[in-house]
Image 1 (cartoon, rainbow, N blue to C red):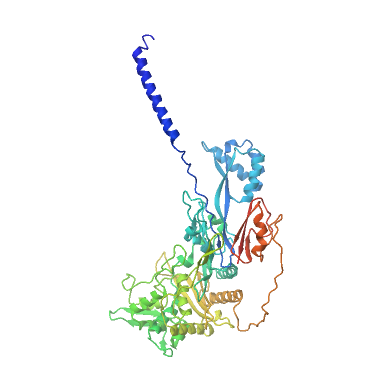
Image 2: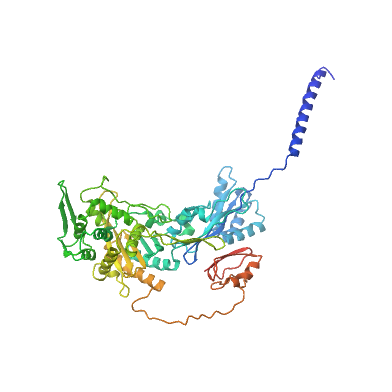
Length: 627
């Protein structure tokens, strides 16, 4: 005690200190009595489902990639580091040194990516080196969700692409995101796993048609090409092409042109192909007889009651033609005369029933509705009805043309299009199976058969003769349309769209085929440049599906198949070929502790990933697909 520490100050301090200690003790007692709080855990990972073709061939498979980062200040000897790591990263030593040098030049830089999206094999090799050299402090690895696209460019716009964040950015990867990868909820111990999407396309046929299409695009020097093939009785899309296409394993370097899903997103004036549906609408309304003739003098002219004059040119002076002859010769004059008889509202309503001016509802993002103007449109004029009938002043998508053609192949009923055949869970159980969906009848069965027979005449005697198959009947309609000039307005004198619609066999349609080539160089008539592609594509489809040809030989089979017994599959240093093996043969693999084997479906093995001959690594994941 002295003058600086008087007694009353000591007492006040002691009281406050005692109260503080008491409060801390009470607080501690309460916390001790409370049950321990659970630490919030991250929801379990959800494995993304695969995308496969209709036969189970993998087109998009879940995997993991790795980003490799460096702290440039921790790398003591950059030259040695670059020399050791460059082979496994498949990078030049100078490239690695450049990344390190640029990172050091930045202020307060403690991190830079050296390599992004490394596959597992590269990651394991790089990590082995960095661990051996004691470079752990200088190198870091980030595991990210990834996707492998085994067929690279095949049907790329249909399949789509998954970004680094694990979410689909285009195509089926985007539209089916909730199905492929359901979002796990906090607290779930066993979240729903991603389901597998079986597309309707046949990957092997798609490959054959893409080869034909690339050759056609190169020969015509066109800017792009679309090709769709569909089952005429189900509406399932068998082939889906849009060229140029993107490499899905290098999507970041794709051009805009390569990523556009043209069959769904791009709309255009179809030209004379549209005459099929215009004449079908008029015939179904009973506005002309099959044997009735119309005179073509190379121009359709009419003066309306308002004084407005309608003038539509034809390519030739065809003389007298029936409606069949008009489709055979693709006559603008006669088509306009026939359409002129039809009430405008009824004509437009019938075209909407065909599906024009509205989305098809196919399972793809960004689908366009095209354009079918009405009488209230600011673009409507006295000539619009007749002009629409020949495929101008109307904009369609390739998918809409296919859907409209299903009306002809199904006795007047349109079918809902689909690019998804079925969906299975991660154990192979089918949770969705696509079934044909007929929509309300648009035209009579008799009208549909008549129009198909007219298209057959077009292939046998008309301008579509280059698409004729000879041993299988095919109905064809060609179209050539001037494209819009977006810079100067109006129509371009140099840019044309050439398209052909085909249905075969005519007597019992199985396949609808539609091909579009834009901005070809030189000859641009569809009958010259697209009809031969239709023939080659139809031949490829017929042979691939084993459709009966008129001159095909018949073979008999006893029906007995001998299956030899086999022992279980053994995996050595490389992945064996599992094709044709049964599930029983695969049972020994399930007991392996060093491998993860995923079996999808039942029956016999049709596909596998990785491919036979791939070196086996520890904890390798093997996907086996059965049908």
